[in-house]
Length: 149
Ligand SMILES: Cc1cc2nc3c(=O)[nH]c(=O)nc-3n(C[C@H](O)[C@H](O)[C@H](O)COP(=O)(O)O)c2cc1C
Image (cartoon, rainbow, N blue to C red; front, side, top):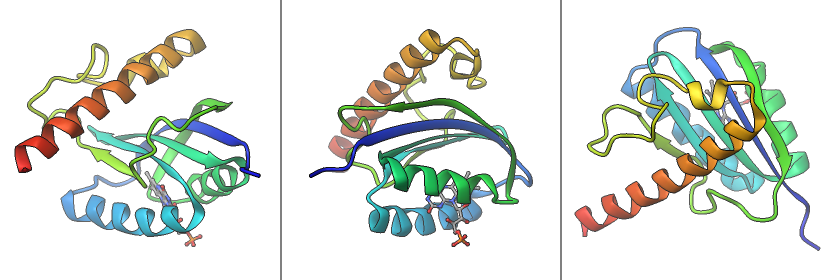
């Protein structure tokens, strides 16, 4: 039997500015660990703030947020959405990464300068923003793969 899938999205503030090397290191470690624990998701970093979606079996997601929430490299960890899901939104990524702003394709409205859409406190708006973000991320990664090919 497959464990129930769960999705959790949080925002946080970097305790120290993350440069490319620090982010690459964080992603590398996260990807190894997320493969082992069957987690997928997405990490965005913009102007000193993180937004992360973690999805997978509920116990694995809860264990990850406990670890991540205690990480001194960021603070003000705020859970925006925590909900059971039928299907993974970011199945292809052990931890997708996007430095918003460096992209040639503009991110969806509201994400240009902040994560305001997701941070609004309104669950309907957050759910909608998350859906748009998942779509945007998917389209961008397909376009990037085509450029490489
Ligand atoms: C913004 C941010 C995102 C992170 N994302 C993940 C992640 O997706 N998976 C993961 O295993 N660790 C992630 N980490 C690292 C964890 O906080 C922690 O350092 C790592 O799991 C090792 O934990 P341990 O030292 O208790 O074994 C993240 C840390 C930060 C600051």
